[in-house]
Length: 392
Ligand SMILES: Cc1cc2nc3c(=O)[nH]c(=O)nc-3n(C[C@H](O)[C@H](O)[C@H](O)COP(=O)(O)OP(=O)(O)OC[C@H]3O[C@@H](n4cnc5c(N)ncnc54)[C@H](O)[C@@H]3O)c2cc1C
Image (cartoon, rainbow, N blue to C red):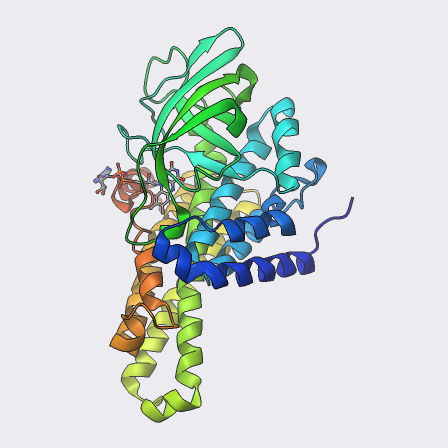
């Protein structure tokens, strides 16, 4: 078996980016799923990046997934987000699924045959990750799934789903289980369309998922999703999303600088203008801040720090909160800098308006208000103000 080398990953990313860039304007315009980019992720093997080597994958680390998510998002934030959310599901399965379930699903992911979608948001509990209103019912060795999901990225294109529901016979909404369902095991009914401001190519439609799955398709122990969320699901989400938002804003800055340096543009603008230079500096400062925070959090986790410890949770929350605010602010700055024609018109090759619309979703994608309330409670518990640090 050959391991994917960094060079291979760079090649895979280059192929997928080219396809994503070619279709980005059209998938955004039509709010359609980027099937071409998903096919490229399947065919290049990129979809298998986070699958452990023993299951035929590349054994990519969180750092690898962060790097790739960011790179893909430079041309199309939706493609980056589709990739990173898939990787979050794979990482959770790799860490918590029993041996049988892991053997049934992960080799298919490594071969590019299985793209995984995430079903956590609910109509009743909204974005609250650690509770659920819908309950699984159990019948001998079978679990009955009947779940309405208001937002499922790529739901109509996924080959498998990780679904949160209350465990059978739960006595509180916090007893949430995570269940794997293969596309062939469930009936999917689209219950509406997808016509948002941004992130349009994620095609995150509302849907109902019904069907029976074998009882051993529970990931980890019944009712233990909240623990899995703290250890793996949430850290992966915060880092992966932040990487996508950073990629989107970095792509916007790169396109802007390239345009500003063109000879024709130099004739039109004074590149020595203090206002222009200050704005560029501020954008770069915002992005370097987000980049540093992400890299620090990735290396703290890689050093073996406990994701459940308060300082690490606070750091991961800071990654999400900061990235979701600073990346959209950076693109706002760029719009001011270049003005109406390149900053506001939809046919500008800079695509700043698309980046701005996409990034506007960042504070909503797991509501910053909700996260700040949880974060503030952690701050109250940390009188010593201990910061997360490397263990070695
Ligand atoms: C592009 C995109 C793709 C997504 N893909 C998926 C997916 O594939 N699968 C999936 O399950 N979900 C997905 N989501 C949903 C996402 O993860 C969040 O759950 C969702 O965006 C939260 O929606 P909400 O604002 O309605 O919910 P809520 O979190 O319920 O928030 C509703 C409102 O209540 C406020 N609020 C909530 N809690 C508090 C509080 N404690 N204090 C003060 N105010 C509060 C919020 O500010 C907000 O205004 C996606 C979202 C986006 C934007």
